[in-house]
Image 1 (tube, one colour):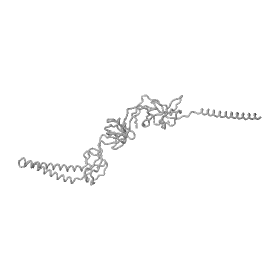
Image 2 (cartoon, rainbow, N blue to C red; image 1 turned 90 degrees about the horizontal axis):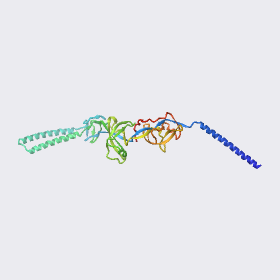
Image 3 (cartoon, rainbow, N blue to C red; image 1 turned 135 degrees about the horizontal axis):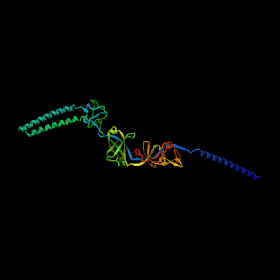
Length: 374
């Protein structure tokens, strides 16, 4: 009787277990069928193509516009201003009087010296007549000649002192701002005004690291860039510094450019782009195609697999940026189709739909503008 009871219990347990297993299997199979009935998850992106580009390695340095001629004009003597001959920020010509100090005392001394010279000249003429008529001596003639030379030297000395009290423009240029007025007293060495020369050429001083400097020399051509990246004008290197700085290990250069093309005043900042290598062939892609990650930069190639488009992650080495495109130095080939806008939504192997027809590589397409390695 006890055995029969145990058989019934065990049989009930087996039947219950089999029924539960059948029920769960039916649930799982139903869920699998429902999942297969839904379409595979996908993301929509805008396709792009890896385009060929001719890339010239360059470096960009900060430059300063410098006048071909520049001078800080200072007084050579102390005195009171008698004449101000220029307006603040005005254009002046070579030899124009800018500041004239009071010279009343020197002018009086000059008149006295000229009178002494006139007397010495008359005495010399008289001594010559006496010697000619044998009524005078050669010694008196030599003394009269020396007196005249001394009087003329005194005139030159006083005139030089007067000239030192006049500040003139040494070349054509534009002055700085000032507040000078007649009657104002100036000490010796007072800075009257800076004078920036006006010419058809401007200089631009810039410095590059020593490894790049070895590829630049006098006669090399560089480009001057505006803050927005526009090329203002080409420039030619005309001089290099004697040595590399010990602190920054840079070498300074000076380039000449047409003033009309630059359109900047002396002291202005300008970027200088210089080629530091031969042109290379690479590819460029939209900036939105490149994703940044701790393990490296990557893009998603769009590949066809089993008749469907899928995302394939590709690690790349990126180069400089130019506008809305970025240079790819390795990891992609010309003509590779990639995800552009919307690439951030992708993962490796994901089904991809495109918002536009897949682009095709254009044989013989013109290269995009050169980009710079900053």
